[in-house]
Amino acid sequence: MKFFVTGVNGQLGHDVMNELHKRGHEGVGSDIQSKYSGVADGSAVTAMPYVGLDITDKETVQRIIEQIRPDAVLHCAAWTAVDMAEDDDKVEKVRAVNAGGTQNIADACKEIESKMLYLSTDYVFDGQGTEPWQPDCEDYKSLNVYGQTKLEGELAVSQTLEKYFIVRIAWVFGLNGKNFIKTMLNVGKTHDTVRVVNDQIGTPTYTYDLARLLVDMNETEKYGYYHATNEGGYISWYDFTKEIYRQAGYKTAVLPVSTEEYGLSKAARPFNSRLDKSKLLEAGFTPLPTWQDALSRYLKEIEQ
Image 1 (cartoon, rainbow, N blue to C red):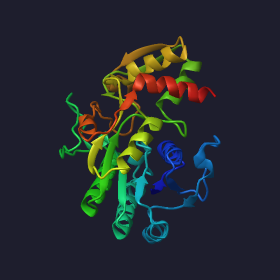
Image 2: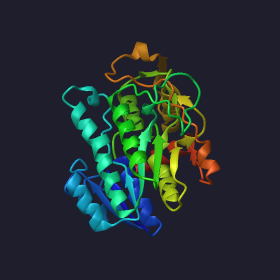
Image 3: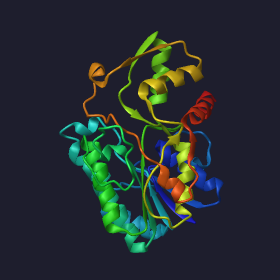
Image 4: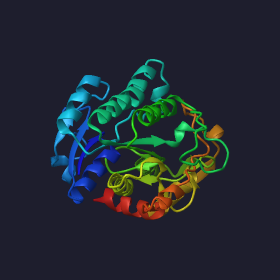
């Protein structure tokens, strides 16, 4: 199969390209930069075909996707700076990328009748309660600009195409970019004690593991909405930090605090990021490994 992948200078796009290469699929990567500028780790993505593309430019998106004519487009590119998205001068840009850019890609996919996979987020829901969110739940109520614009992207895909996958993920970490684990490791080196919220609950997602599932999906026609994070049970950011430090051999003390006590965040954060993933099994897909296992493998990778 031939794939076109957006956002390959980010954590997930990087791993998706490497997974495609591993399986013998043809992959063309893209991002807004004129050439690949992700981590220079010597992996397959660094040498695979690449196209600089601004997804907000409708005509260019149409032209490039028509030229490449992929069997599937994996749309990983997004505005993901959640707090910055709240700035009045950024809202229009965030919407242009997350909603407008996604609409442009969906329109191009419709023209050439290709599959499309769109990555989304639990932020499309209001983050309240304790029940895990179901993939086909339509009780949308975004807490912030990021969540609202990602929801608009979801609707652009579902209202334009029939051959689509919408995959919601949460608490993402990977080699190619900033993430919570890297931040906490850096903080732990310079502090004896850290304060971490214990009232936001979810599960982490390792992009290396997720990439395998996304390619699995595109090798089928089992379209629809899915939730995908690592297995291993629901945890708080406090629990996650404790395990990061335990596995990394840090002695840093971790103190649990409430979101209210912690403060500092411009965009509202969901308390409930629990995603129900049972639909993956029902569709015959292999779930991701446990987050504890993923963390262990990730720590080994970033040591190298």
